[in-house]
Image 1 (cartoon, rainbow, N blue to C red):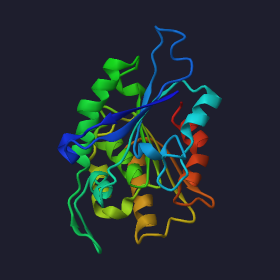
Image 2: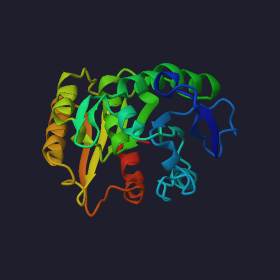
Image 3: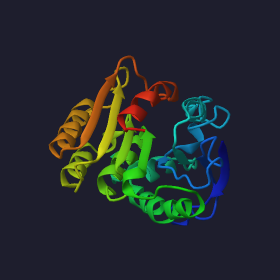
Image 4: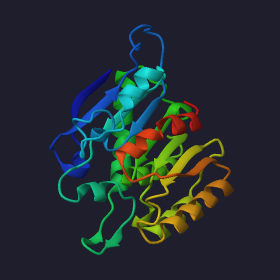
Length: 251
């Protein structure tokens, strides 16, 4: 079952609400003593329902979870749809953009809110397993970049991450430095992919992807790294990867 509620993030967007989604396993109420791991996801409006999705196609996570009866809670927060704010909120880096000029990344503000406000609220209200070993993060595109950011810079919170088509083009140098300097525990598990039909959409994407994967391996991260044959930059393509990344993350 997926429940919706309104969320505000004052440090990022003031008081205007955005939609929060939480998936609870269909059997959540069957055993009031059972607790569940939690996966936090970006672009929550694209995660469960086609009717809410930006382009009319979601990941269909609700259908997958119900069909597989996966013992996992999913928390997904809608992005900021105001102008280019999604790009700002989902970037850990300041960067130059040919259209927008100088962009100030607000990714740290977002992650601090997720870790210090959202997660404690979820842990207090639901029967979660709040420890690092049972806390995951997942996203695609800019959300994939944020999932990588969360897994490396907030590694004390997230043990496992799925980074689908991460927008490494935002700051290739920043991404490599971020991973190189990160203190990552060697039990960390990261799934990272890119579609073969999208990998050359941005200059230096392929080179940065390879460099990032190499650095993660040197830090002894349990890395699943793949190029998806025919994969595109779309929810339809990311939906097809769900059983693969869930298996790689041990869910």
